[in-house]
Amino acid sequence: MESAKAVLDYFGLLDKAVDAKRVLKGLLEPDIEGVAQYSSDPLVQSVIIQESGGNPKAVSPVGAEGLMQIMPNTAKKPGFGVKPLKDAFDPQENVRFGTDYLYALKNRYGNTRDALIAYNWGVGNTDKWLKRGADIDKLPKETRNYFSSVMGRLDSGR
Image 1 (cartoon, rainbow, N blue to C red):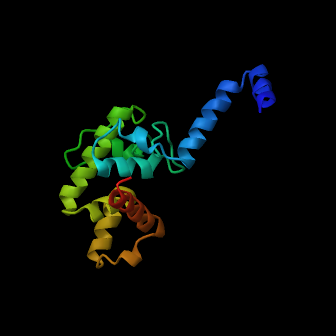
Image 2: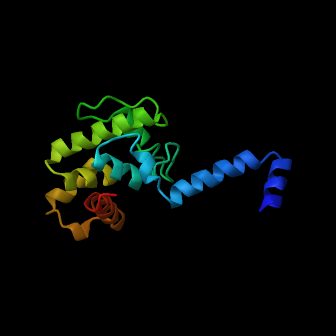
């Protein structure tokens, strides 16, 4: 292992390798304890862990950014009286926005389940799903798994 470090250091890649390892560790092992520095709200903490694993620089394959994985269009025009997001990679700003948006959805739908579904799948999709009878089995698998994971973490206290 030391020889690998020496080779990386020789080519000036040691810092990049350490950064890559930290990012990968964040994806594979969410920083559950570290998330508490961003919010004391258990629901918000659970969303952060699910969305980014606690990595404030996370970017999803579809372009969602930061701790709470905010889509750029949502950041610019969130609606619901939520102040737009200026910097998705500023952890405090990202969590402020994500929390405001999540709770605006909770107010709109009147419950945590539908708010989380809308946070993950989008308001338009959620509204259509509710009009069609709100059958959980008709949600995309990713959204069902998302809701189950966030709520399961809340129920287990992690």
